Image (tube, rainbow, N blue to C red; front, side):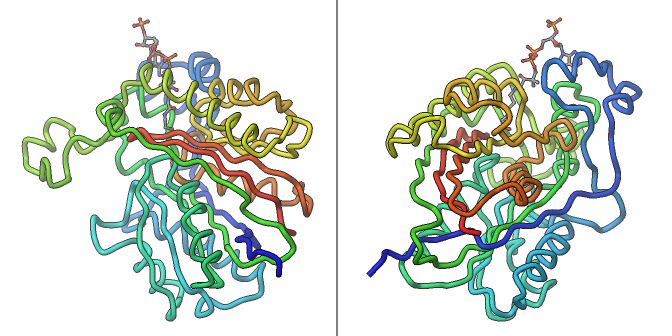
Length: 329
Ligand code: UT7
C-alpha cells in the first residue's frame, strides 16, 4: 500500500485594497524610495484600514475563496491551524474566531506563533495530522495585520512590513505527491533582535509601556539580516542535499519575503535561477505569516502536478526551516 502523504489541494489569498507606497512613506518618515528599493526590494505594501477589522477579517475572504475553488463547505474542515503573530486578541485563538466567522462548525483549531516561519511550521504540523490518519482536511492559514504593531515613526521597521493573508488546504494523497520532507529549527537566544517588548505576561500593558511605544515590533535589522541571510540559504540547501535534489530538479523556490537581498542569497546558495523563484515583495512587503501562502496563491497557475517545490523561511525567535513538496494538482 502506498504511504499516505499530505498534499496541498487548494490555495487562496487576500490582500487589502489600501496601498502604502514608498513615496507615501517619504511623507511620514525620513526615508526615500531609492533607499527602500535598493535595501529591501519593496515598492509598496497593503494596509488593512477600517474600524474593527483584524487579522481574521483578511482570512475570511481568503478561506472562502479557497473553499469555492475546492468545491467544499466550511463544515467539512477538521482542523484550522492559524499561523499569526498578530492574533485578533491574545486569547481566544484566532483559529476559533475564524471558524465561527466562516461556519466551520466541525473544526477544532489553534494558533501557531513562530513569527515569519509560522506558515512553514503550520504546513509541517498539518502534514502530521494527515499522515497519521487522524484528519483528512486541515486548513493552514498564514496572515498578519502587521500595521497593528508597527510604529510609523520608526523608519527601520515601518518600511518593511505590510498586511495580508493566505491559506492552504491539506488533504491525504496516495499518488506519492505532497509534503516529502521538512527541516524545522529555532533558537530562542535570538529573541532580543526581533520582538514586541510589552503586552505579554512579562510586561503587561501599562500607561508607561504605551508611552514608551513598547507595543510595537522592535527589530535590530542588521543582526536579523545576518542570521536570516545565512540560515535561510543554508536550510534550503540542506533539504535539497538531504533529498538528493539538484537545482535543475527543483521547479520552484518559494522563499519567505523579508528582503529581496535575502531571497537572492537563498537562490544563489541553492543554484535555482531567478525565473524559478517566487517574488512579490515589491508589491506586498513582508506580511510575516502571509508571505509564503500569498506566493503559492499568486504562482498557483504556473505550478504543474509533480513539480518539486522548496519552501524556506526565517523569522523572529529565531525560527527557520525548509520544506520539500511535490505539487499535487
Ligand atoms: O522577516 C523576519 C526577519 N526580518 C528580516 O529578515 C529583516 C532583516 N533586516 C533587513 O532586511 C535590513 O536590515 C533592513 C532593511 C531592516 C535595514 O537595512 P540595512 O541595510 O541593514 O540598513 P542598516 O540598518 O544597516 O542602516 C544603514 C543606514 C543607517 O544610517 P547610518 O547609521 O549608516 O547613517 C540607518 O540609519 O540606513 C539608515 N536607515 C535608513 N535610511 C533611509 C535605516 N532605515 C532607513 C530608511 N530610509 N527607511
